[in-house]
Image (cartoon, rainbow over all chains, first blue to last red; front, side, top):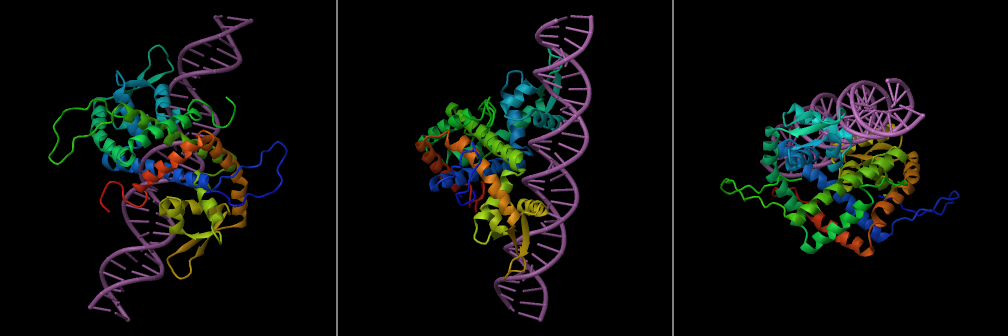
Length: 172
Length: 172
DNA sequence: CGGAGATACTTGAAGGTTCAAGGACACCCT
DNA sequence: AGGGTGTCCTTGAACCTTCAAGTATCTCCG
């Protein structure tokens, strides 16, 4: 996944020369990319097949189901599931059409909306959850030792420190 | 990301009762989902911004650039980058329109095609690589200690063992 | 009060992915 | 030879996400 030669060409002033990945780093990177590709694909496939849901859609419904009042401000919800407002807005539109969610004006702020889980929506998540959790268990937890699980937890924490609040590469 | 109550309802014969995730497992799962969501998004954003490429598109071009002859059978290429044949076919169509790849009949097998990286395509990857590698370094390697890197490598290996060759949940 | 600027959300179009179907060719077996 | 079956790849439609506007409302401040 990387151009091979660490070419010795000149580089502009102020440009750091690229530090290419060494053998071990390349191996890790390739494996990580594979996991990043295949794992979500499996979850999407299972949810699609068994519940006609995206992982993102499931995540939103589940998040609502766990929230007191089973509803959230759109922007809040978007942040919780790591999606853009636009993405969420489109999704909620679709979920609304299926009767699993409804929109409600947010009180106190005329600009805001809340996504509210309907009873049908709640039933939907409850029905979908066992299959999804089984998949998570089978593809993640069953594959890792308890030690690896806590290692992975710390690794994710470290990675998120650079991903979650701060902006990509720029100064924040 | 999970329905809260471990409901004590009856289940059909032969159905295992769902083993819900405990506190620690839920925490890990949430973090992992966040990483699975945000990390690819960052890479896609950077590549889109700086090179007008998808991570998948970059991966394909890079893979070709590393291959002797700078070409691969479509099916082979699809497997290497963990994509479906259809996805690859559409992508190669787009890359071909931009002049970075061209299709060539595979010799020996009248059904087959090879994707061949053009010179322009090679220049394209070479131009895109430094920015991408910098991003990988900044978001992954700089965030992890050497120990964590080798832990992650083993974790990925363990996860891939259940993902790569075998089918999802069914018998193979 | 009133206007500038930020915030919350939506919308339509463009682009990418999946899914199901289809065409061309290879392989196998009689 | 030749017909059934499987493999390699493409295609079009449906779906989802992103991107760039656009609308409505709030906040701040003179």
